[in-house]
Each structure stands twice: as C-alpha cells, then as structure tokens.
Image 1: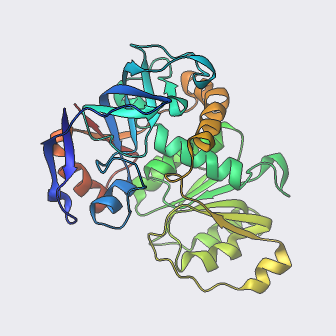
Image 2: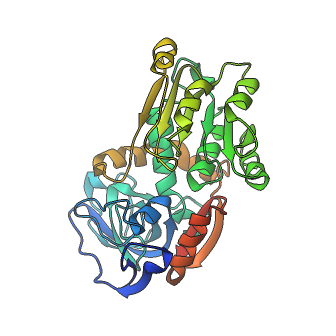
Length: 334
C-alpha cells in the first residue's frame, strides 16, 4: 500500500510518499480502506520529533480516518454498533492514518453519520473524542457548582478542537466564549455558536469574560496553550471552575496563585488521549454515538473543513497547519 512516511524529523518536506505492507490485524481490530484522514497538531509534533509514538503503534502519522471496513473480526460484544464488512466508518487510531489501509480497534470505529462525506467523517474522531473526554467527562461541563447552564471558554476557537468544542457545548445548551487571533477567525467562532469571540492579540480575554458574565467568570476553560495563560485563566474562572489542559503550545511551565485555587475551589487538570487504552476510548465512542451523532445527523453540529489535500501533498497540509491560517480541519484524501 501507499503511505506517507516521516523520513526524518524536521520541516514539513520530510513527509514523503512510500510503500508499506498492509497492516496485520490484532485481535479486536478491523482493516479499513482509507478514503480520507484528518490532519492534527499531534501529527506535526510527531514529525518534528516531539511526540513519541506509543509502544506497538505505527510510526506512520495520522490519528483519525474514514473509509470502508474490508476485513476483521466483527462479531459479538466487541461490535456495539453492529458494524459490517463494506460499511463506511470513521475511526480513532493510534497511528497509521496517512496510508491507503489502516488497522483500528473495532471499539474505536463509529458509523459515518448519515449525510456526511468521507472527508467530513474523517474530521470527526480526534477532535470529538478529545473534546468529549475533556470538556464533558473530565471537566464535567454542566455538572459543577454552576449547574446545568455552566459556561465554557475555548482557547483557540478556530482550530479543529475549537470549532468542535464551540458547536458541541452550544448544541447542548451552554454559553460559549472563544479566543482567536484575527477578526475573520473570531467571526467564524461566533457563526458556530460562540456568544463572543475575543481577539487575543487586541483584547484581554479575562476582562471580556468577566464583563460578559457580570464578573462571575466561566465554569470551564479548554486550554491548548498552557504557559503564561494558566495564571490568567484562574482569574477568569467562576467559583468552583475548572481548567482542562490538552496541549502546551505556550510552554509547559506556569506561575500560578495557589491561594486563589484554595479560596475559590478551582481545579486544574489535563489529559492526553493517544496512550489511553482501548476500553477508555470505547467508552467515549459509546457516549458520542448516543449523545453527539444524532446532533450531527440533525445538522445541529457540522464538520468544518478548511481545505482538502491529496495525501501526496501532506507536506503542504502540515505547512498550512503550522502557519495557523486554517479555520477548522485540514484533511488528506487518497
């Protein structure tokens, strides 16, 4: 099969087309003929040597795919959604997505929502698994001290994660605020359901959030920045608020006021999804299938695709992601 390989660590042009054996299946896995694969920030980190591949995972980049099941064990309790050979699915994978064929745990495969193309479906797994796991399971949006109407602030609202978090929280009835780096991105965030998008280059997100919530603050902050943002985010939280970290684009070190954490019962937590076991991801898949897939099929949540590249142009896709000019997802196709 054809695959896009990281020939050495470095700039986008180290991504080159190559030939690899079709993956051999492990128990509980299926083989998917890949039609499209999402491009995500962890793929960039892996290409630059800053995101080690988990033991046993493919060194081919790519964490989410859409395509057709062509082989594998589809029997029993391992198949909660009743998937069949020949069915179109999207899947979260530990690696190997930038290839014509990829293996995936059956429990991490979901049927393509009705009405979606393969490109749209390929944009779903990494961001939706990540957002659900962190915003709703870990940070418990809607189940904290603020009650069912809790508010969310999304840092980097125009990213793939950001557009997912905005739409999902909005569709489930929460106030949503977001930050983005220019007027066009802010407008896109507001069109997707953010009550107010804040240009972080021109405005203080703490001051804006406090003014819009009558000085109360938000209940949950989804943070991909870390670094110096964390201390400011504590000031933007309501009593009992939670920050959930999913990336550290602004650095791994932060200086914070722990007294504020104590006095106002604040929580700082975080997680990475890739190394978690299949059973953990299967539980997220079940929640997505029950709670989110109907919203997608009803049109309440829509995939946001910025640009589609042929897989052979993966280097150009990575360069676009690194420039930060995209709104939503970048997708590769075969």
